Length: 305
Ligand SMILES: NC(=O)c1ccc[n+]([C@@H]2O[C@H](COP(=O)([O-])OP(=O)(O)OC[C@H]3O[C@@H](n4cnc5c(N)ncnc54)[C@H](OP(=O)(O)O)[C@@H]3O)[C@@H](O)[C@H]2O)c1
Image (tube, rainbow, N blue to C red; front, side, top):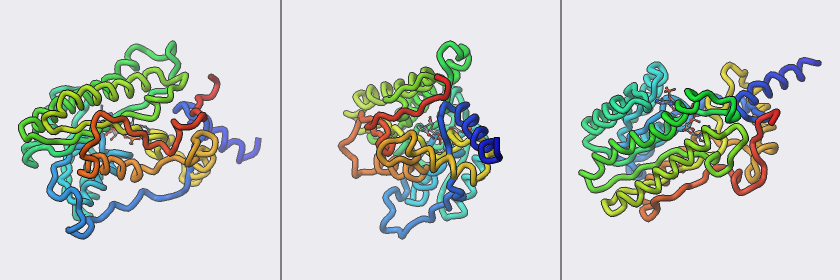
């Protein structure tokens, strides 16, 4: 086996652990923090935006995008060092962001996070309930604890955040909530029982909440990202060049339509659109932003199943 084969095997091994057949690297550095645009063009000037799970990936990109458009962003995650980094990057770019450590599995922590940010910003105009973890095991391989952790984070965590956010939005008589589901809610995989169940639960919460709170002027929608280049799919420690090669091969093999992974900023832009007044008549919807993956027939297959 030559060096190239060894690298490829280790890449596929890492990918298989995540339930993917291939991965890639385009060598791009982390996208620069967007700077606030000209004042007249900022869609979210002064709006209070709350985000769960913005210490990396899609949440981080969305926090930066909201801040760049004038929002006051409050966000959480468990990793303090990552939270402080994101907070500093946004502030250095001229934005307004506040990090607070909170674990979405813990009701008291979620309540404290929501209430502190609402106090600080005078309410909550927009919430993005995004925190989530993955899972790639066949049903008989999953421990009960692993199943519970995925549901507690992805489904119960969204319920808890929404529960406390709505208390503030009802008082204000308006609000927009976007919750992160996944294309995996629509396209199951053999090793996706825990994850797909949790992301379908998010869709259920969203539909019920849209009906419950529509009369009070609160919109609630789910976003269903397809495979996105974040730490969620990128094996830790993989060199940039290897990841770029993996990414390049991944798209045509696994994703119909655009044949590539999404960048986190592309999902962030979709979240901002859903939260904006442009979509004032949309509620209870599940919006796929997956490059065409669920419209097509390819499926991201775990190896060996
Ligand atoms: N990347 C994809 O291909 C993809 C596709 C479809 C859907 N999604 C969904 O997109 C969301 C964001 O994922 P990502 O791709 O951006 O991956 P990521 O970079 O791993 O981000 C996950 C975020 O969730 C937070 N989180 C996880 N468990 C938490 C907990 N118990 N309490 C508080 N925060 C928690 C993480 O923060 P800490 O670790 O600091 O707690 C992190 O900020 C997830 O819901 C994921 O299921 C991702």
